Amino acid sequence: MTTGQVDFSVAGKVALVTGAASGIGRAISIRLAQAGSSLILIDIVDASDLAAELNATFIQCDVAREDQYAAAVKQAVALHGHIDILVNNAGISVSNESILDDSDAAYLRAFRVNTLGVVHGIRCVAPVMPTGSSIITISSLSSLVGAPLLGAYAASKAALAAVTRTSALELAPRGIRVNEVAPGAVRTAMNDSGAPFVERELAWVKAAGAFGRMAEPEEIAAVVHFLASDDCQMITGQTLVVDGGLTAGPSLGLLDALVEGDNK
Image (cartoon, rainbow, N blue to C red; front, side, top):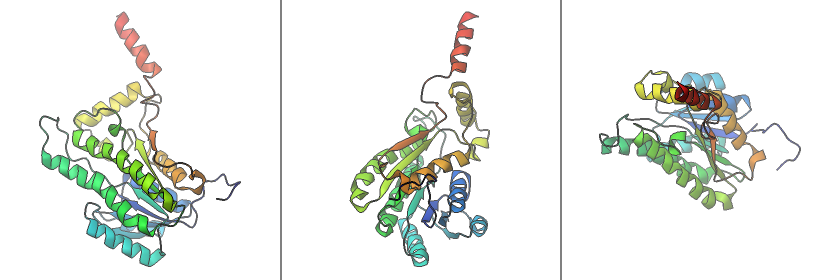
């Protein structure tokens, strides 16, 4: 590890980002490319325009299919020889039902993409990672606090903490770090949908969050950049919460509103 560097350099590294076409994955891809990494973009939808913009490689792949993932990694290694950074970002929210009304199919679909998609990434990519590499998984605040009407999504994301800690311990002898980032509400297409469950979440963030706003995708990308760099060699097996202080406690604004309500 080089001492004296304060820029969290990822220049010259090869990074594979899943779910790269939009939202957080797109922001992460742009951030790492601007920081000097060579990018392999993976998504089930077309991200070829972004790949052209970043001088990256796009490989269409369903992360829930291990055979497709393995083929994508084989293609990436043929181009670059190895992978230094894996960002497990691909994920879906499949239902907005109560636990009494939701289906097994919804839970199975959420786990296939959100949980097994990450397992497939670690299983396929870790063998081609050199010492000093970094695996970063995008989890969710819903894995740490209750998420009404998002049971299948929250359960599939909560499982990632166990995957992260276990793989961090198992891959440490290879010099590979494994961490996860748990964002709160982020300004993405899903959170612009206007769906009732989204409106409730945004009202909660506005009332209870220390900053009273959603995070921008670029703010999550900055945390991933930090964890991907060689400067973070002693951080592994951790969940880094990026929620604008939402889980730190009630905001002053919320407490003032509660007091005002009681005094009426």
